[in-house]
Length: 490
Ligand code: BG6
Image: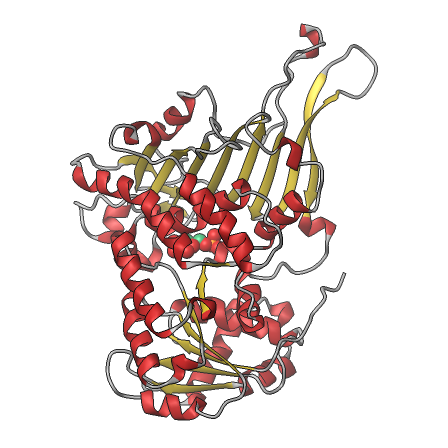
């Protein structure tokens, strides 16, 4: 099957932090794929910007290497690579000083194309770059793309958003949460709003609880410096996991227009029951990995990787959230994420309530509840677990089996990386999959009391061995509600 490609308008994309990890691993490969598929018009340009004093030639060589390393060999097409590289140039600019800004402004002064400034830099540079973009005149016409994290807490997020807002109207600001660009995340919207089947049962009367797990096998790799100032709650929950929760829990928006969707997500965030110092111990577990094993062999613990034996930064978090509104009252949302877990898996499990009465004999076996499992990665797909009669003669025996829609098998197309869609959405001017200022701040308002509580106690995060599913306290937290974390059922 061939995916449908609609070319976007001509654009000039300026990537700040162009020699950094995100640009090399994600942005350049994503742009190459869109170009190779014919989505990027001939006149479009890509300009790398960073403090390093490189020539355009040298930056093109880096881009070539990025494609070589981060694009699958089957997608290397010599002509497409040359065409892509020909769009690329480089301008050295000092984000916090004067150097380079005049050249940058002059370069784009007369462009009639859509101008996009992508801040793929450390968060400490967001404000200085916005100020300079304002001062040099580019902010007056550019769209601004910012990565997470926006701030470290509510106050600092407001300060960053205020600084952005001084130079860019909200209608030109694109706050990236790359989880929203993942194919299956969008499928969640298709599932909920393109099928009449689910909406009548999508509420507390029929859903027992929801689980959202984002598990990683990797440790903090080379990012310990950043990670130690963040931790799993800030790094994954405040943004990615709460966004997933919003998409599961929001009311059907009237349309997919950006503000229609974002208004509904905001209401969910505002309805999250606060986690307070009184209930935080029952509703939040934080963990930190110790030396153990991963698929590649023995791995050191977080503190050794960091080189600081005193860090209390969590590399795992499990939360029990509740949404205080009519649709979801009393339905727990269990959220969990961590580094150095046994497998890389992200999924949303919607667990339905048990049947009210069984007509079957004991010999039929237990009647287990239905579950809808939306797998984000790997093996994207949706499974609906149903009870059926065990086939064949003999008595009535029941079994739970999945209606299994594995997207890789069903649709033989390459699954695009989230950044491919999101970058093209910026050019299209579609903000639906980007976070609005008030969403970011509402998410901080909910996580902040947890952060403050942790900061105020001397308790260390609970230890877990690398390669296990986090501290036992996470199992105990859900077990207290007589439930268990989802494992693939047979
Ligand atoms: C990033 C986090 O936002 O998401 C990383 O900062 C994390 O710590 C990553 O590893 C996970 O993204 P993905 O797409 O690999 O699931």
